[in-house]
Length: 280
Image (cartoon, rainbow, N blue to C red; front, side, top):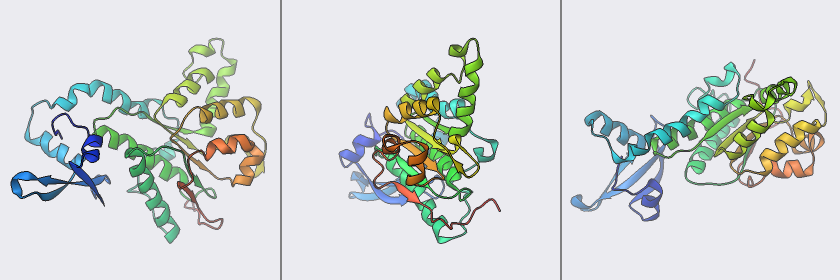
């Protein structure tokens, strides 16, 4: 949807549109309001994505906002090209997240709020913490997908990457035996740069890469250095873990845990220890 050359952010800043606080049921995106000067300044509410789709169906004209289509597509496609995840979690969305309890509802609302806040410009990390199987990975993947889709709908090129830390650690470690490790897609050097420089990074199952079953062990030297370097050099990282702060201190150390919760003061959701697993 085009309003001259103004961006969504500048429209909000200049009062051209305002966020109503409502959410579009179809797209799970913010609903905005705009005054109509030719109709007595009456406000009309709209979802940016709904309006964009309406315009596209009514006209084949190329909108000026699509001049950057190749750049936007590149940012959007990074999620699908570079994410490291299991098939089990690939289809996760907010819509197919199952609510079995009040805790599940609170967790879902947290995920929706985090998504909205990041797209509106929030900076800092977010943390989902709780027992295995309660839905942390599902919500993290859903947040990643929604952030990616929302920025695309606003014609903004932002890169979003979701990585399972245990899977990624295994892939990176495998390259240690390669003769041409520098040219490997999962070399430590390449993945470090990629994950540091992407706009939004989701780290799934942090801490699991350094544990076996219920046994908590200290992270190995290269794993610690690899992950610490990433966390230390970026903001806007969404993290989920099975482990408490005390347990993370045993796996890593105080400096590492400090990087995990950097800027996450109001963005931490903790499941109760007795939260019901969704795997059974």
